[in-house]
Image 1: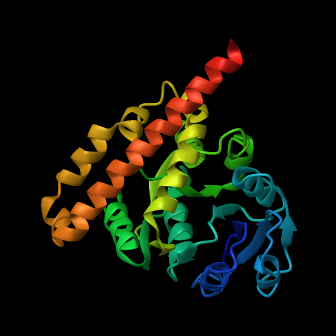
Image 2 (image 1 turned 180 degrees about the vertical axis):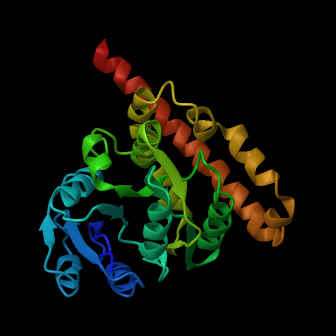
Amino acid sequence: MTKQPTVSVIVPTYNSSATIAACLQSIAEQSYSNIELIVVDNNSRDDTKAIAEEYTKRVFVRGPERSAQRNFGVSQSKGEWVVIVDSDMVLTSSVIGDCIEKAGRDGKIGGLVVPEESFGEGFWAKCKQLERSFYVGVTWMEAARFFKKDIYVRLRGYNEGLVSGEDWDLSQRIGRVTKVDRVNSFIMHNEGRLKLGKTLQKKYYYAKKFTKYLDANKTTQQVDSQTGIVARYMLFLSQPKRLFKNPMLGLGMLFMKTCEFGFGGIGYINAKMQAKKADA
């Protein structure tokens, strides 16, 4: 009988006590059994680390950002394949098994996209769930998170200089040297009780950091669509039945995205202005 390849699941955490147990439990309940679980915590001030230690002995402390945490986790792993899971995600039971099966059928695969679906409490979380549903199968929006370890290591993993767009960046670099495919099983993304103000604050923060992603991916074909407001609205409007199945949710989602683009634009412009001042 052929031995199942080991899959190392890397979970970066920071003050994740509200979501980490559900995340790690979903990993423990995978139908695929040969899994190594590694948690890399960024000095959480809550019970994240203690909760993680109930699921694995391989809990490390590392920062300063999630890209560094992910890369460190991979450096400590023993698997032939690695999968990066955020602490607010819940894996459906067949995710790892489906990835291994797909990769086993095609030796050219070096990365796999696992589609995401959002869930959460309140109106804005439902709006985010609707938004994310439009991205399933859209190649310029989705990014791989299941990787052949030797390729990941050869490409030095996530660019630790990026705080925003790092998922797209790695997935696109992987795609230039090997095949990136996708599976149909889902990862569920826990939005919690989403608040519009906090969402816009986060969008502003990441947009300020987005210039580094653009500088690193100037020639990448997907960038225009990823950053284009028109492309995003065209995507939403291409499926009016889905968008307006619940008219209030559809309008709420469009309002939320418009606000996000606005705050993102302000963050991006501020970052460019600060860079110019620094160069002057």
